[in-house]
Image (cartoon, rainbow, N blue to C red; front, top):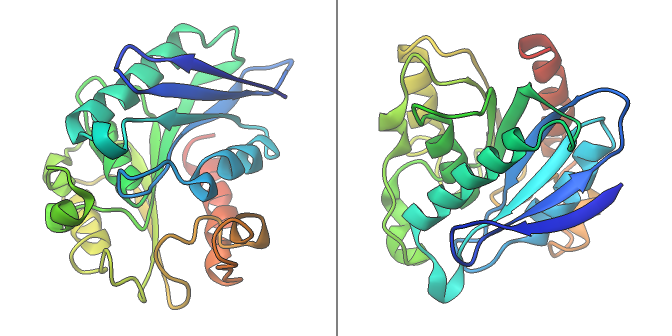
Length: 237
């Protein structure tokens, strides 16, 4: 695997590339980490990228503006530029653009949902982990966002969503349920897993992410990843 980083035109933004040499073009996932715009969480970024790489995905991580540079609109622009770069360089990156999607965690889930609903989106699928959907924690994050459930249309790509009933930062009714309802109303294919264990910010929920996440591990909630792979094989491939 060759790991590199390219700067995006959006200031304070870049794209981490986890390129696996391949004889064929592979599916690819653009990962948008959480971190409340305060940091890019390792638990949601490189460890998720490497895990996807072991399952024959090309993987990418968007590093959008955080801390004093945090800005929701700037972050959205960074995500769009990342997709443009990947599609433009698909051949050299061994990416199949028809199997290119986005996955976001928490605040990154809101950005992933926003990008998947853009008219010119290049995402063919979306995966949202305990996502922020409504702007209920804008004050806490220090940004002005939007209710991304209101962006859903009949053209929104197939979406996989997971969360935990124990999540009190992005409670189910206000966030995951609100988005799933809009997907259902617009006839968008989706799969939803709201686990009875786990919590917010748990990433892969296994030991690999737990060792950089205060040992937060949950065997049951970690099932989201193999469930996603099964869903992907049925919906995309």
